[in-house]
Image (cartoon, rainbow, N blue to C red; front, side, top):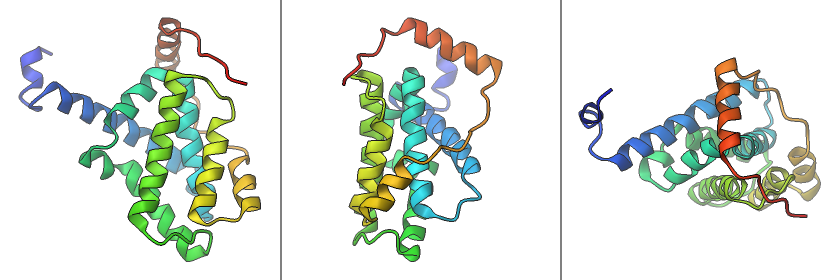
Length: 185
């Protein structure tokens, strides 16, 4: 595709980047939602989504950087990712897991924590239990009990399915092009 053709659909390079980042986040959100579709517990669903997003960024930093660069925009806040979190927040309040006062603030808390953790995972230092620690703290901030927060944040993650051979090769190429992550103890 010629460079000029892209501008038939987008007004600027920033719009292209935003659309790409939102699409990457939305596709991965759909994958996560499929994996946890049979779970009724909203607190578990929130932790699974958060942890998978951060884990994926740890495994694929190029993906993580693309996703983290676009969040904060109006379009991103209306993305599938935001809608999944909003739905789980509402369900969690109905189920009595969450006691937050303001849904907008609760959504901001979840999204901001995920994106900050994705950035930490892609920029370093690498922290192996970062996804679990972030998920546990978010659940506590939303009103879940400390014991429930810890249990859900450390439960086994559902399988998202095996990546295709093309995805495996693409990830391997990207990993070879990046410096090794710094490990923080």
